[in-house]
Image (cartoon, rainbow, N blue to C red; front, side):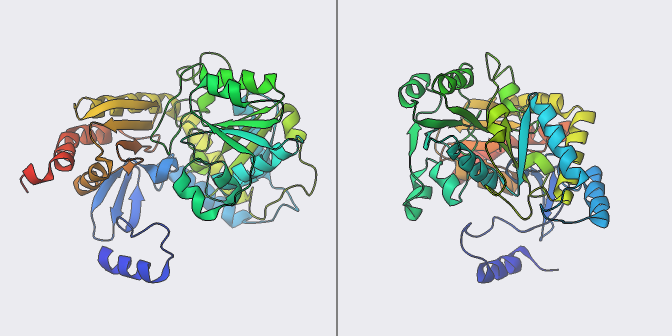
Length: 401
């Protein structure tokens, strides 16, 4: 059997150094559990960064992909397929308003499609937010605020203005009649699960529409049931008034690990693209669409929206019971923790040593985004292990081996 060390040596010899050395080499998974090449088992509380909505090896997802691949694997967008059409209809129904859909292979590509769509308004200015993350392709990167990501690749597509996240007054000051779209995440994931005030999204909609601009919500991390509703902007815990965005971008959990993304545009915005304005070879692939339909079916049939809300509350309560966690945030199974000291990297390492996979979003913020069907047993195991994880992270020299 090839070990973690051997696999890692081979990895560093052939893959570009864009991610650094892997934390471990995973070889199989079942539910919310994964195993590495050395046989160690972990509870996956990151879920491929909010991707594995049904965990690993879910039989319904496996069956859907297998059956579709045996029937029709790829056809290009010169032709249509039943899964593609059914998935578009399903997403429009979940959104709850008239819309048109463009399928992609990833979240960054969904945002690229949306970015191009905003240009069809005849305006070019985008008002985005500080702390945002919308992808690493050149267009999506232009909309992402983190200088460390942006500066090595400048000049980027221009006319993007960044304002403080959650600040209605800042939006009021920045959005004008030159603005094509206001772009916000309902919860900022990459920044460490930052939740805005409940009036923020309704206010963003009002401000955009008063200026003839589009409201574009990036739900790549928050959509598909992650926060306990199909879309985060539908969650009454997050908004104090109805929100009907003009553009919504999705990806991550949509097909449970099979690459897919989607750009949904409502009403008039859905008719801005003409033939030839945009395209994709693989987007809307019947296998990916079949996988997404299976994910949506399981979430609905197993009531995973309510389950995600309940399990997320348990995770936040368990993590926040320790004084070294000074704040818990999020909705559903998108959970953010602020630590008393900037030790997020140490917490992630200690958690992995204890058999749990987490993410250090920033120096003091930890992020969790586990499968929506996370079990009580896995939550209880985390709760029991958490104090010792913090002991090792905060005072490793003082903890007995």
